[in-house]
Length: 424
Ligand code: HOZ
Image (cartoon, rainbow, N blue to C red; front, side):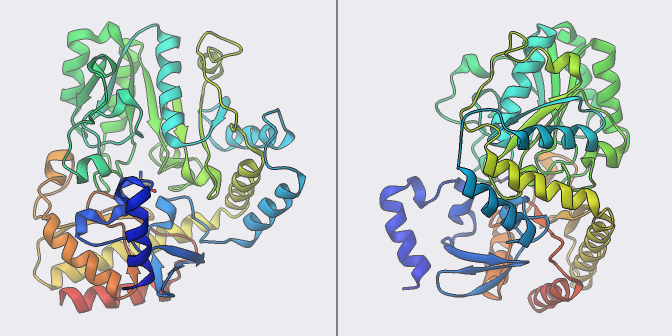
């Protein structure tokens, strides 16, 4: 028995499913998790000292690679002063100023502890600001696990084939309307029926929890126009795309300004952080200024702020990083496309910049239904092979491949060689 197998055997006795987040259980590829001991650059190492090229990157935060020395130093230094005060600090002001400077649609921002919390709070803010209750989300988009958003969600919910979650009272989702990603008509139908009651549309500007599904031309702009017409707010969930597609996220990449934005992952540099922000007049409804209550003992935690601030500062000061990262993404995903095509397989490769997915289907993947046509058994076989060969991919079809600055061309080439061995 390997050390990972032993640890998993122990874990299942005391942790539901042996893991602290479902997709990590490797259940959908019929395998068991590798227990990770350490990470460095583009590599992670398990408890059996196997080395893997890591394409998860903690599901996005490690854009600079693991254990980046400046981030690590900032955290170590911050720890010397105290781990948490539950009080205002200078570093959180610096962090808020930087976010407002980098993302033009944001004039005020509130720090929280996760993407789930950021989205839950942004929705409450939108409802409080508009004094309306209904929201629209897209089937296959995942916005964390708060009650009202576990409706036709992506990520682990989709992988498990569970349309909704047990334990969510009907009352919590009665105001959540679902529309089809990349289909403006499905959105208009809701607005035609009850437009005056809709507080907001929330969308992943690049869907990355049903695998990666880019927005089709005109989709995000269409959402902006519909919201403007009906006085609803447009919320971009940039937990994955924020500070990844560019310093100003998907909104900068596609040139569409949302009213509210949610962040997680990269904004914390590997520490648990989320944030939501937007125009001042909207954010002023949040307590203690306004009547929308939201709070958190560990919000703006000084260690997390030190990590996030350092990572964002490095990204701001090195704009060439994004060009390199996006060029690498462009090249890497195109090479994958060539490999499957040379193998005579009709599979689809979707990507935007440094995130992408290989779908085991002949259908163009543009929404939840087309993503679901993927052959998840074929994916599982491929994923297990890659793992055996030292390539650590998300163990589920409906997640993304993440590249980081530490994934050099040489590392990417090594990965492609393994893919060639599998497919050709
Ligand atoms: N929510 C993440 C996938 N989209 C998974 C998080 C985790 O397992 O750490």
